Length: 180
Image (cartoon, rainbow, N blue to C red):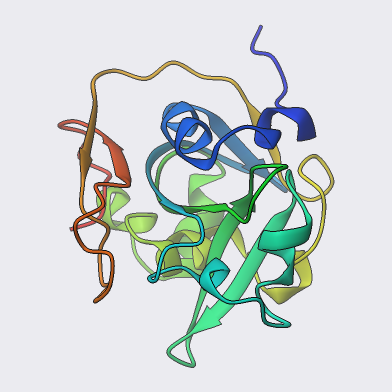
């Protein structure tokens, strides 16, 4: 049986946490899926943690909490805060659906499994994650269990203009559910 991930798991360095989340199983309500793509953010220029703001305070003050923000006026993005000694968070970019698929398909209005959770906005819509999750502790509204990952690859993060040289996007190589 898989071990439940607790707050202490997230106290570590953000990059270590990010890599280790690949393969873990996220459950929210009656839906679950394997995390197959993430991005790490610390205090680099592309990160909300670069400057302390009301929105980014969670990245500075907590670890093992859910950090949700709204982007482009239309998408929610799910992150987990990390690193007890610094600012950090891991953006969950893509999930391989496991259970509650019919519910996720209704929420996303698509039957295409590969397109169901293959991006941060898509997975939040599929799992019905919104701003009401922001600030909750891991284990309250969202639970995580340790999982198994295959080969993990790294690349530059997606959609940023600063700190592009940092290869802080981690994903399960050849997994059909990662973002485009």
